[in-house]
Image 1 (cartoon, rainbow, N blue to C red):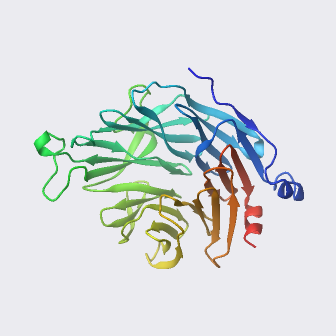
Image 2: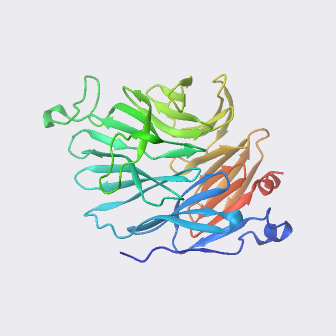
Image 3: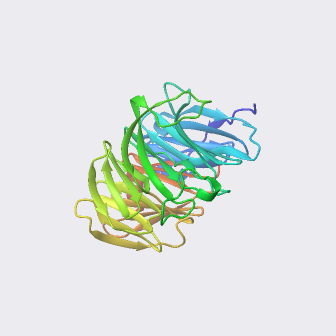
Length: 358
């Protein structure tokens, strides 16, 4: 086993802002020994993943308490081709979820969870898909969380019937198409759909099923925004249908209050969740892979491209930018902004965020 990656608290990166205000309103920065590859936040704490080759660690950081707590570590798992974190984190209160990916004869995916009180990893879902030879199979997509709700998707790809792919593709479907999907949430009791046998099984509850795509994109205040074959659906945590939007080619989403942000080719579109009407649209600078929709909160849209995080206030379009030392990740909570890049993670209190926007 490789030596665990160590996280060390450092002095604030924004020295001028830190010295200008009180300690409770000044930005705080964490320095890590390895690059931060994923970030999630909920309330006044953040989950971060640091990684170097096959070794990676997940920790919870509470900046106001100046406390960092390692939660889960994998060192040198020894896969024949590739295995490791999928690069996504989800934080729901004291529960942190993550995805793992392994490439071999099949694409193996899984979602697991741990808590601040109980670090032992529990498996929520796992799947194997023979994508290279025309076989079918299951794929578990990344977990997404907010508040008490942590949700994920399991989707089924169809296979070539001539190659005995299971399930075989029905008429009108191509090999690899998603023919069914289900959305699940972490729960206190209930059986999870599948699990990785090297982690104990966790507890899950079924939210919804579909004969086709149903991919969780965003979670907020007990609601789930999911992509379907026909657009976007907004669900309750128990599977109730709140709103359908016929918006095509959605790559990412963020929801907050009565606003739903959707990343579509060339722009970010803002919809009213009550009426379903398009209320604003902002041009994107690059593709959805490069110019990423990160979050939406407090009426502020957060995007990231390269080393730069952009904050845009929906009411007047005013923007502010923060440049990091590596590929940027950002999450906005009522408490403030968490932004990571390279070996640094900074918490910027909401009062400071609002000052930056003028």
